[in-house]
Length: 206
Image 1 (cartoon, rainbow, N blue to C red):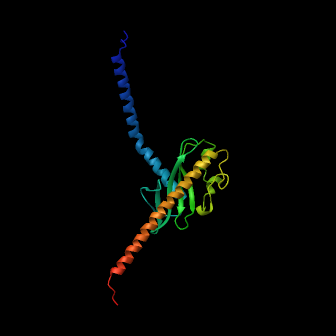
Image 2: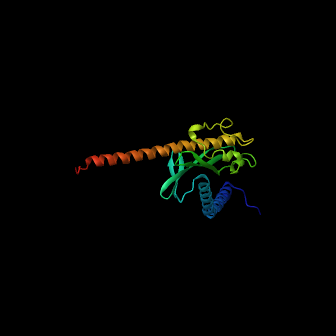
Image 3: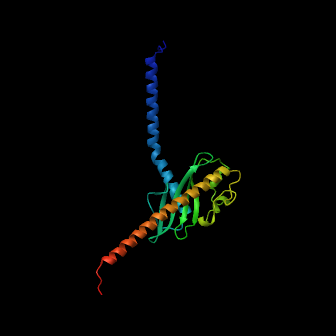
């Protein structure tokens, strides 16, 4: 004999179903959390190696400037570059690009997409490291380019929205780099000022 359908029965069944689903989702999260984190870390490490000059150390955790996360890379104790993460809306959702800046020149060393949902065969071509769209960024001097798609930047064929989004990520990263260097310049000026004041306070031996 079928159970009589009542409001109480429906509430009990729905509550039980929600609890089971919540338990399954929680279990799936616990199981997949570490693999997902490792995959994201691996992507970041790969991108760092692609967008920066040769380095032997890089900051373990990202810093923040100008609304972007960034990493500092050094070789033999001297800073050689900055890798800046920048995001904006692409054709298929959020697009995140890693932009490497050569510390010696301030020029773009290279760029690499970190995360995207662009259309396979079209916007997803931004992943092709050997394509003209990707190689054209290498060595660009920000002071000499307006970074306008079709005028200054060659777009991915039939993917203007993705190309504009990628370009916006690069320009945002360059703005963040200006913020980074501004802070560094201020810190250097503060150190110099402190040393000058200290030297003036020290008695002369003459």
